[in-house]
Image (cartoon, rainbow, N blue to C red; front, side, top):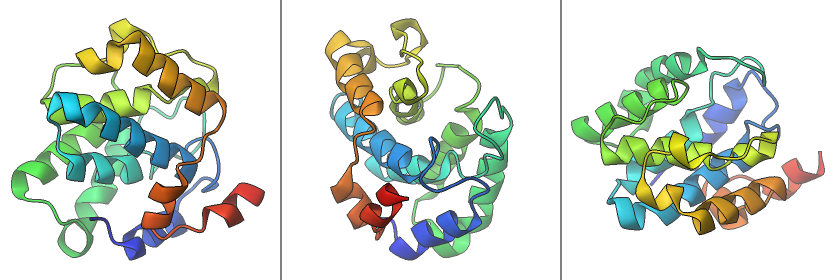
Length: 176
């Protein structure tokens, strides 16, 4: 389980607004997307949760910042000892998922694929419909899953229970 203090540390160092299109509401939907997929992909939920929080942590702008994945992986590596409670394999998967989420690839371990799909399923928040050919896992390519995630992204659905579990006062951020 992620410590709320880690979430606050990530928010405090963000180059972008925490309530922006790559911020806390997106992170929580990515986690919820991963939760839905993991039941069928056998992905590691602990890795998916850290991925959701950290994958956009070093974005410098909301446009085509294609190096934010490698920067976020480097940032994550610096957090390993004090903040990230994963075994060596899990941490390796996390770094691969974060580093590679900007590449558009699909060849990877099922946990990494699930992380990537969890993020890609939230693309409608920026007006991009997730395309089944660009999703890695069979469950993510299902039309009902794409429609479910896209509706949530379009509506800027707030995963309040996830945010509260991370110690985030989402109401304060939703009003800004």
